[in-house]
Length: 66
Image (cartoon, rainbow, N blue to C red):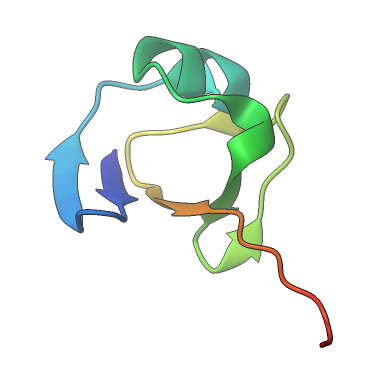
């Protein structure tokens, strides 16, 4: 599967199948710090990923009103 990472933006190929939690663990990414988007849809941590998926991992950002 193709994984798109941000900050810095880069793409890597990762073997599948695996679920989102295992992918994040293998990439040493803290699950609470990111959103995982699979084929343009938000993915849950137990969702199974396959070879033909495109997965984007975006950092969570927060802000507030001043």
